Amino acid sequence: MVLFYFNYALMYYFYILYSEILDRFYIGHCANLQDRLDRHLSNHKGFTAKAKDWCIVYTEEFPDKSLAYARERQVKAWKSRGAIQKLIDTQGD
Image: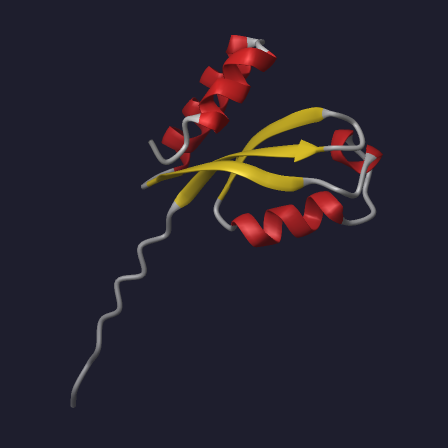
């Protein structure tokens, strides 16, 4: 009998969405970016329900949920649109 072991490394993401209609950013974390974006764009209640043009403008990958959440809290604590825009602008540098 042969057994196969698959190590599926689940990654977590810190992300920033942008809505041109609202000219606002939304900051969050999740395990599946596409699924999370789909939920933001679906009919629901909450901040992102105000617009249906949200797009992912920035992501960072983390090996566990607590680190992704810590990064979310760190960036939200900046309370600075300019600092968030600078982070987005420097992605890939």
